[in-house]
Image 1 (cartoon, helix red, strand yellow):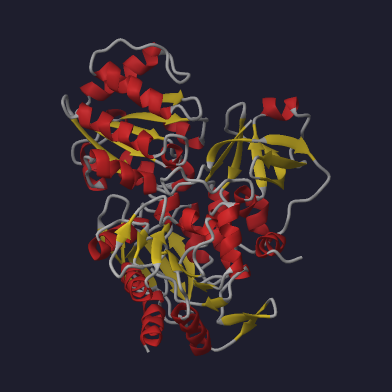
Image 2 (tube, rainbow over the protein chains, first blue to last red):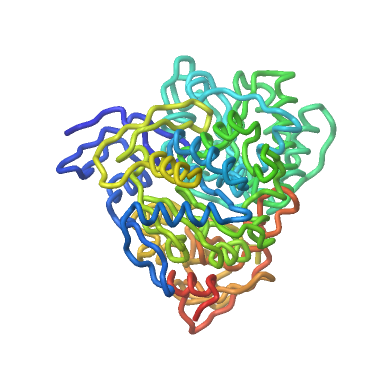
Amino acid sequence: MRVADVPCVFCGGLCDDLVIDVENNVVRKVVHGCALSQGKFLNHEMNASFPAIRKDGELVRVTLDEAIGEAADILRGAQYPLVYGLSNTETGAIRKCVELAEICGATIDSTSSVCHGPTSLAVHSVGSVRASLGEVKNRADFLIFWGCNPAEAHPRHYTRYSVNPEGLFRRERRERFLTVVDIRETPSNARADMSLVVDQGHDFELLSALRASIKGYGISDTAGIRKQDIEMLAQKMKTCRFGVFFWGLGLTMTSGKDKNIEAAASLVRDLNEYTKFVMTPMRGHFNVTGAGAVLLWQAGYPNSVNFSRGYPVYNPGEFSVSDVLARKEPDCALIVASDPISHLPRAAAEHLARIPTIIIDPKITMTSLIAKVQIPSATAGISAEGSAYRMDGVALRLKKLVSCEYPSDAEILQKIIEEVRG
Amino acid sequence: MLLVTGRTVRQGVASEIGKTGEEYSKNTAVVFLTRNDMELCSLESGDHVVLKTSFGSVVVRCEEGRWGRDGIAFIPYGPWANLICGSDTQGTGMPDYKGIEVTVERTLESPPTQERIARLLRGVQ
């Protein structure tokens, strides 16, 4: 069976032009997919999870209903549960996570906290001018990628959305000027018209110098970049017809964090005095944008939400996953479609490993190795339907390509909700 | 040196093959240095090194990176990198995953396996 127009479920680019061959309920071939996409679809059966409960230090296989029952018991008896992950599943499952967090009085957070959480903080302060990737493809003649490496993290971004695609008004590569700014050379520099290697931790200064230059103030060499290069870049940005600022974790994870994004958003705002300029975050997990969207329309806030008072309270730094775990506050955790043991700092991972942790995931992960309860699920976008939000906020319908012996994340969460409610 | 964590294609693909498997550890328990820094530290590709920060230490394999910058030790996202990252977020929710001061030193020890890291985190031998 050949299925066309399949959205990829790896990164936030959500390329929806894959053509996938399925034989005997297994994905055999992925056409148009990048290396990450091939890795995801062709290995969807590898390292598959199974229902299990940890007894005497070992995960012991049980029935799915027993695993779900144990998970519900843990959540029912908890004083302060944590619900975390959300970004690698479909929108309906995220909605169920929020419902469950509200019922349990839990803190709920998505991987966004350790990804573009600082972007949300900056947008609260400054706002941001956005556009769809379709607008970028059709109109952009100036592109800047700052603190991100799309060649490795979003391999088809250049060709499908930004640098090389044939758009309505920008039909050839030479009609677009590509600038890459990072603290080190990466494969993304290879095709750049201009590359700037900024001193580690000094992005804020460089962004501020650019703002000053755009407004006509005199500047000096800044953050390891020569004055004339900053002035040339400022001039390019001011005189383009449609510019786009893409940024990644090189700005959110380094010193300055949300202040870096505030400076970037202010730069884009300033540029709109002279031309059309927009900004789009380079989101990692395929539905991390959806996690923020669902939490926003259900709780009113994009991440780091606490329901212990019976209503949502938002406070990044207090209710963010790394903070609550490092302070050893949660007495149990429900992890959905994420692998925090692979992605959280040691102090946070240690507490997670020492409390009853429930993991819902199609695969065995590092978090499975510390989990009290392991619940397998169908893979969103491969063996379960649903929807997901692309990095620019456009929602796309995911396809079910193969069948799976286990229910979807949303169905499992619904069962847990029913059991917790009693 | 300054430690920077980040995505690589190989780490991303390996995570889909299986995070408890060899392909994942091969592509994640590794630090990339420039040729200059390798020479400065008398290291060759394939050597094992111990990375030490104020938050802890971890043994990983060392490779010469095709890309990079002198003074930057680049390590893919993963449980090995996390062992030497701090959890303080300065009120933002985001820990410092980039720009951590780190020392790099050759060692005869081997990188911990995923099982070993899990036991370490659980506090069991």
